[in-house]
Length: 94
View 1: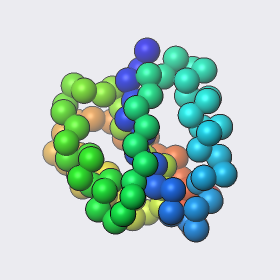
View 2: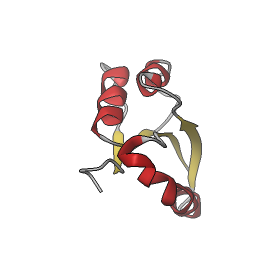
View 3: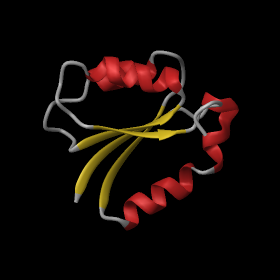
């Protein structure tokens, strides 16, 4: 199983991601992904939760949100070597 932290911003893109987060979670779990889902609550949450992730805690960190959320996760994970998977759900990314 692939251990994955999914950081989801339910507000980005005017909340468009809320329409399909359940489908994303279901597809990941059906493909043997051990998922730890985190919902952001405010600006800066994605960066803070990313900073707390240890190098070998997850095989990959997935981010579902807009460009701001993606930026927060990248900056929070830097300088680790943890792979990032982007699931776009912002206004301009969908």
